Image (cartoon, rainbow, N blue to C red; front, side, top):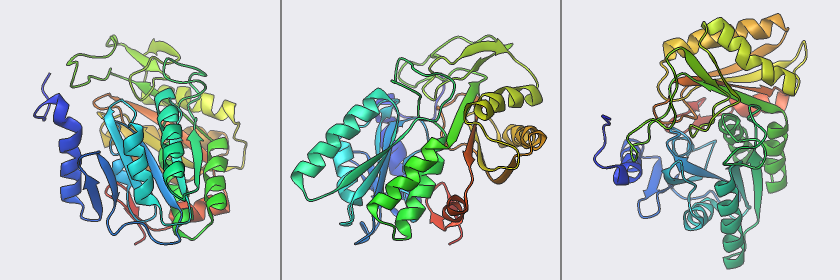
Amino acid sequence: MKKLINTPAKLVSESLAGLAAAHREIVLNDELNVVYRAGGPRPGKVGVVCGGGSGHEPAHAGFVGMGMLDAAACGEIFTSPVPDQLVEATNRANGGAGVVQIVKNYTGDIMNFEMAREIAQASGDIEIETVVVDDDVAVEDSLYTAGRRGVGLTVIVEKLVGAAAESGMSLREVTQVGRAAVSEGRSVGLALTPVTTPASGKPMFDLEEDKIEFGVGIHGEPGRERRDFAPAAELAEALAGPILADLPFGPGEEVIALVNGMGATPLIELYVMNAELARVLAGRRIEPVRTLVGNYMTSLDMAGVSFTLLRATPQRLALWDAPVVTPSLRWGA
């Protein structure tokens, strides 16, 4: 295994130090590995917090900034941040109007966010609401979750909730924006290669050269099934099918689409997959009115792709188009 690191034990902290050095609009608490907006919370604005295990970069520290997250807590590789980290992130995001926690549906994340919420509320006058993202249609339950996993839709929810908070909406209104998006967004992914964690130095699972892992999780969890490798057109059909069947999306509808790389898939291939997704949607008279293509919710060095579709509404499109300035997502400012 060859990685551009010093030691696995220092990987997360040193990566965050590099992120903070490159982006002066964010600040790093290097004792707790919490990233927050420079200048502190804006008084009267609802705070927005997310977090999770590292290894999914740019999620979530890369989305801290104006129009998105106020703070992010970064656990070790594929490990939930502990309550102390989440309490720090929540306090850093608190501008007096309450805080929304965006939580991916994994057992460790749910438990630690709940503990952090109780601690933060007990120690100060702060109202906290939670938006749990569970968009993965591949499996209902896994080793890491009760119910569906939280994956690519988390990025879209962070953008919409962040924009809603930035616009001055109340805590109740901001929370509703997030929960409504979760109810109308779906994702599924596939892996071409397994993920290798720096601590282990070996792949998390074996995958034959002529096979793909369909419905894989963002931590290298097994998916729905192992399938034969196929051209991009067939893989796009296979990914879009379960999403369109699950909600379902109907003819004439508009969607926000995310074509997300899993970490090691180059953009040239992701754009091929986007072209194929657009073809599949056109065949069903569904229009992707906004599309984001790139590596946003990754799994270290895994090669693969995931599709996310969210039903578009006028409010969601306005929030999506609102200005955002973060290390990894920025437009309109």
